[in-house]
Image 1 (cartoon, rainbow, N blue to C red):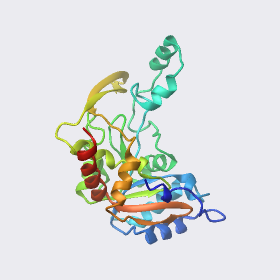
Image 2: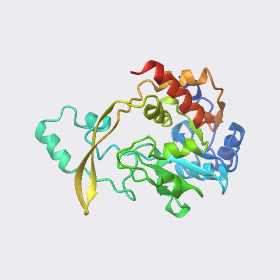
Image 3: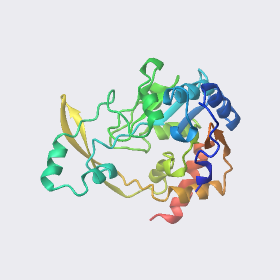
Image 4: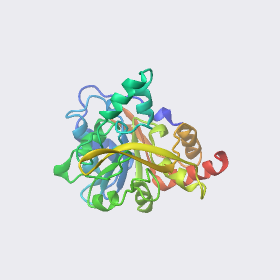
Length: 275
């Protein structure tokens, strides 16, 4: 795994400014017109002047008016099959679990906060900047840029990260994956390979709360069984074949590489190592 690119050992003294972040992104290889799928650990950057909103502004400035910034804005709090839910109810008595399920909020594409970090939440809520969110009730993405509506459209509820998700569109448009202060364990692009390595990948049931006629309703569907437990191993496999651009954004070790290189190499690894 590329954990060597994470951490904040290089955190500069004083607050990290937007100008500093833009400069670091450019040095890393971000250029105007790119479409970025970004994963960001805000704390790894250091003390950012203006916080998460400054990071979003810097990402937008780095890709320019013709570029797009996309982030995962997933939600687990409205599911009873997610790991977060299982951890939340661990040790609760059955009646307490039932009571908790009855209070679980339905997904609202406009208002449900994401649980994928402060920067993703800042991007999701940047409505004045034209942020658009996809409508998957558990694995939504949000985007800002001239292609945001197209990239976020048609995200089917029965497809977390496959051909009917923004990931397939990002692959098709040769997006770059930017990892700031995180390793491959956070690299959502690898999930697309789980749909592609075999014509018949294993599936499982997922259940979450959605709004039907304004009322919360349980929705159960089948989709590919997602397993990120080996993403660090897959990351090492990728980096044995592809040399990502490396650098620091503020104090955060960071990488930039083509999404196609990630997905194609991950797909080849899964063909050999998954059954």
